[in-house]
Length: 143
View 1 (spheres, helix red, strand yellow):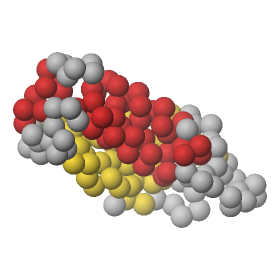
View 2 (cartoon, one colour; view 1 turned 60 degrees about the vertical axis):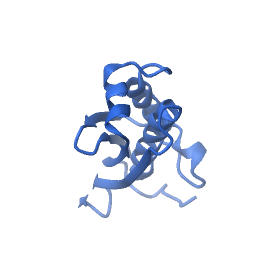
View 3 (cartoon, helix red, strand yellow; view 1 turned 180 degrees about the vertical axis):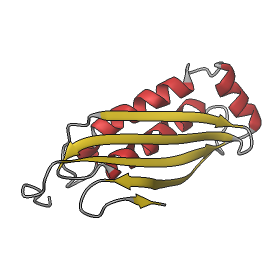
């Protein structure tokens, strides 16, 4: 792990997003709440938050962080068709939270896939990327 003990604790924020692309029929099933495994969007939201909190256990050499805020928003989008997944993670500490935001989005997308794979095997997870980062030595980044 990189030694961050000499770095000042500052407020840091990272935002990531991705999308899950599917047929309109599968999206309708999710939105109506009739998926066999239950509430797809609610379950994926919780899975993403839990994943952000456990990023250091999943990604080698990531620092364990005491996150101060994690939000995962999932918006059904008929134009894809599919779901847009966006995570925002905040911490006050010596290192950033980009990996936590990206992990939250990845696991939320995977959870959506898991909950609907019996209905549609051709679902695609696409475009997972860092949207914005604030704080730290490198300053503000926006994709």
